[in-house]
Length: 88
Image (cartoon, rainbow, N blue to C red; front, top):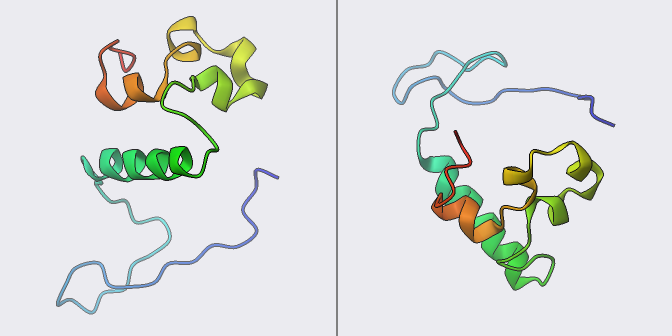
């Protein structure tokens, strides 16, 4: 566990260019990850696997003891709306 068993890259680096992507190519995702994260969290809440007040400590109990309190006690809504400034 924790190791890749296979890697691959498919597609073109730029629309209209036939240069293929490579495994080590880097992409700027910008703010797209925020919307994807919020959508995935919403799906997990809808499935009953999490709730909006689940904390990082609840979601990752095996890592809870090593977390800084501001991360351990932050819940999903706070992480998605950034009221605590946990990114700092």
